[in-house]
Image 1 (tube, rainbow over the protein chains, first blue to last red):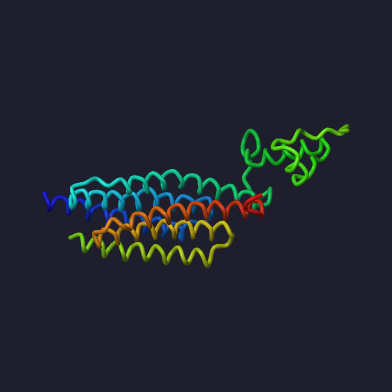
Image 2 (image 1 turned 90 degrees about the horizontal axis):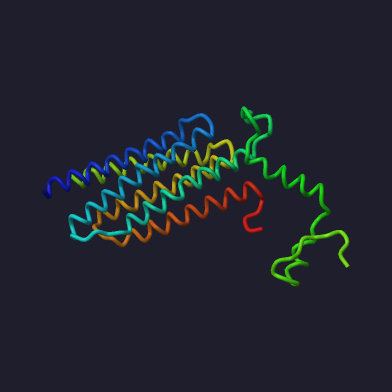
Length: 149
Length: 89
């Protein structure tokens, strides 16, 4: 049984390290940023996941107690990896010129819609008062009206 | 057997860190560099966990968890700075 545990831990460590290496190699190899965003997802999901499961099995076999720290790290990384990828893609799209992005079929990219809606709203209504004035009076300032007393 | 696997993991993850460092210096846009730093943080977390297995100590998981949190927060702050030119508005 100890032999099987050792084999399992070694296999998980090797799989995790190989996937971390493949993810980093993909970061070098892939042509543009939108493709390169795929590479750290592999490194997170299988690389760190394999190492964490390996350490969980190792300490379960060694101490006889299940440690939950690894599950916390796994949960945190799996939650934050899509968020960082989405945020990086958004930052990259907003740094491109409008003609460089491929045009979607039906309507434009939704990440640019909020800016257009804000600009339309700003052009319709007068400018709101600066935030420093509103902070002292009340927690939630009323909307600015042009005929205020 | 675990010793050999751990040494292989050290070599593979360090090679991955070198690849990330190359992307960090050569990346054409700022977003590439931020992505390289994010991947470096993930690789260092894997390195810390493998080192914890080698020493047989559970003390290193706190360090790994802290590094995961710092990596996420710093990546989001960098992206926010690229997007808006400001982090806390």
